[in-house]
Image (cartoon, rainbow, N blue to C red; front, top):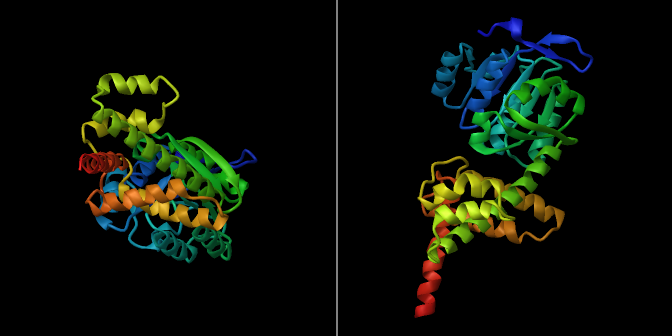
Length: 312
């Protein structure tokens, strides 16, 4: 178990307290987060739907491998990083029955506003706090401890756990009340999807026009077209390397959440709808596990189809 001499987290009043932290969900994002929490000396338990993952990480870090929600009962903070709304609600319902009053659950999953609000209400009946805190930065951001965390919920609760979250964050921003974190993530995903569409379409055209990547990419990055996706994925997608940082199937899941939020708000959803259609097609073509930059394969295919149609 970690040495709790180094487990001091400051409350807003400056008083230091010992904190025990659990992490549920040990995928490409959750496992690196757990390692950073362990580096703070406060990690107590880890859990995962696939028990072998929890057992392996627990053995590596010398912490408890949870086999039931009861194994988190002594935690002051439980961090969730799971895939689906149903997973969040299932874990929240279980934690509500075992966590002590005053504990806090921080959810880093990307889910609907309704799920965030239901989770907060479920835990509030047991006097347990809840922060919806989706993240941006992908698997690289998690591995490098440089995630952007957008938080909805009670600001005082955020301050109680900020130092733990800061172990894997480049930026933590309190966006407002419950659901504000997920609302911010929805906007983030619209921008990400739109940028992905533009970059993949542009680079597919660059290939068709015979431009050399070694000259094209740094030239684009030096001007107004510069962006994270072009910088991190431009070279890899041009050599057909689609090892996942963020999978196509996860992008489609997020976009379908965003579609609902956007339509309820009454805005036009052209970018969201096009991106959702494209990622659905990619998944149908077998790219569900590929990085979102596999979108260039679809843009290339369309260019070929359109060119054939013009020649006909």
